[in-house]
Image 1 (cartoon, rainbow, N blue to C red):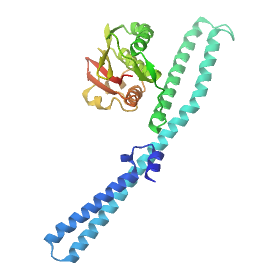
Image 2 (cartoon, one colour; image 1 turned 45 degrees about the vertical axis):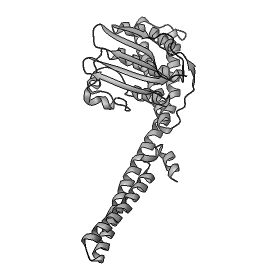
Image 3 (cartoon, rainbow, N blue to C red; image 1 turned 180 degrees about the vertical axis):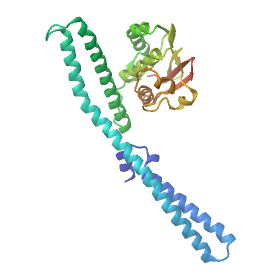
Image 4 (cartoon, rainbow, N blue to C red; image 1 turned 135 degrees about the horizontal axis):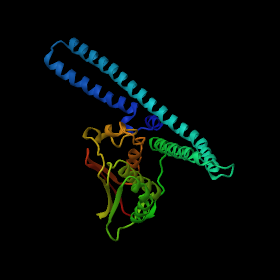
Amino acid sequence: MLFKECKKYHLPLYWCPSFIFFILGLIIIFSILASYFIANKIISNPLIVALICIFLACFLLILSYFVTKTFEALAESNRIKSEFISIASHQLRTPISNLKFTLEILMSGKKGKIEPEQVEYFRILKENTIRLKELTADLLLVSKIESGEFKLQKEKFDIRELTENLVKNFIPFAKAHNVEIKCYFEENLPKIFGDKEKIKQVIETLLDNAVKYSKKGKSLVEIKICKKPKEIYFEIKDEGIGIPQKDQKHVFEKFFRASNVSKGDIAGTGLGLFIAKSIVERSGGKINLKSEEGKGTTISFTLPVS
């Protein structure tokens, strides 16, 4: 019964309403016994002692009932939200893919000549379609993470080679933002046993953030990969706008964006770091962040070697 409820709400055992009610029950029993022995020593009349214990038991039972019901309502609300995100993401994938395909056909000129002044409008439509597709994919991934359906397809791969290829692809984007990317890779790095595509997504997210949130003017992004006992250490450091101290404890939460970013015009959903943290931790590693507002951010993670 207890484990079925945990599975229903996609919650760990210690968050399940039934488990919380069980713990509260133990607390009530202990409180009643303690109050009985204390009252029995202070009050000589056994009837008064019994009435005190009965009153305390009733009060704690009512309190635990409402606490449990509150947790149950929150768990149900979280379950409905996750299911809605999953259904909405699935339903959006097909029309977005069709829209992208239609735009590509129109832009190719196969269905008629495209006037020069129309090209820019088609480009804007295509970019926004791609953003919608990426958002839908992220929402679907978040839904899988929360529901416990998130799976890793593990294999041996070279993280240095993976990072070098990503950096090459990011050079035009970095140049557009006046950002230089420098890499420092230790020689003879051991291979990682993990999900190559998922780790690629993590590095891509961190690199995208480092470039995107760089301050205006010439800036530098540094990537470091080195070997540590039984693990690989990956670090990316930027000279960007940084994250306010009060926001740093929330950066790995869903949909969270720092206060100095949300007020600006930098696009983002607040899902990237949540997904990155989930992937790293499920791969057996840890992720950390150090940041100072106005000076930059350093994000690092470790992964076990094969």
